[in-house]
Length: 142
Image 1 (tube, rainbow, N blue to C red):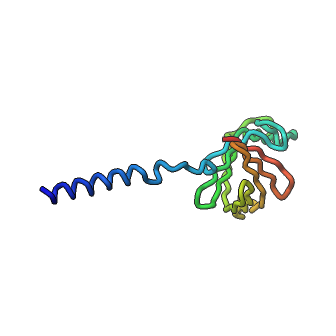
Image 2 (cartoon, rainbow, N blue to C red):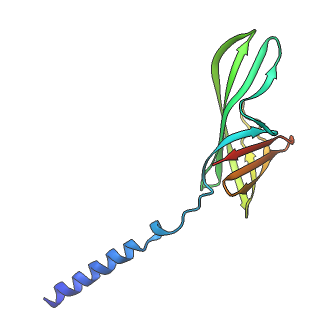
Image 3 (tube, helix red, strand yellow):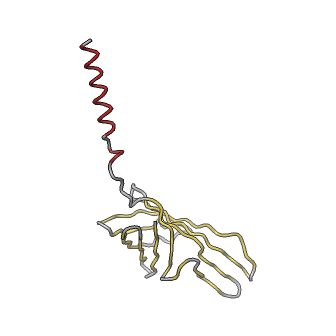
């Protein structure tokens, strides 16, 4: 009987310890998806190119920060050639970031479709403002 009571206490302590694990600890809400709201002060949709033969409009975008210090930036572009709409174009580029407090340095991977831009981001609550090395400012919100 004594052995059974000891096993019961050990099992109870294990359950209590499991209930106090990191699953109840506050999660870092920095990581996850931020939707693009504006480019250089203009709210989406933003027309990037508008001439007689080509029109490109940024209709949607997002920045996803991952806990392993990687990021993905995605965008959807509406296109029209010679006035005729085409299927939307989906773009996605990734890279890595470093963090110091609320300031982030994002370094994009250079590929055939991605320029490998370096940008600085500042997280203020649920707003993430990113300025790239060309001076373009993107505002993302959670």
